[in-house]
Image (cartoon, rainbow, N blue to C red; front, side):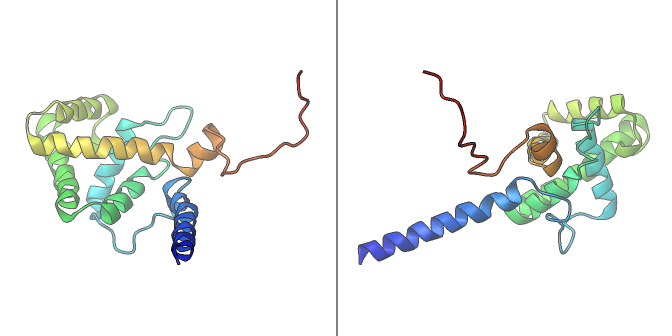
Length: 173
């Protein structure tokens, strides 16, 4: 009787371990597409500019090039509660309003220096809404970038478990 329960539990755990990393690592833009978008188009553009400011393109693609903004929308829509979803939306509006007041144009129209200055201002703000927004977006940007298919296959050379087995290796004595 207990052996059956143990086998059922073990089978469920193994199934979960096999299925879980499928979407959490090596994600692509198609695998994280939302059925109903969480944010309106103008806020998606602002979010794309924010992630591009956090991880800009260099000799490797930046966060915007890897569609990290789409990853953030998917994670926030699927894994966070309604107040956090609203905080993301309100934070994007707040960022655009602050950019309009600071340098007279929307956040995504500013140059790189202006955008970095504005994000640092949000990060050091005493306003809880501003600080909470950047504390949500910055780690999700880093997580989305590091777990993207491009980084996993081209930069870290990740191999799925159990990985490669080389059975013919000289053994040193």
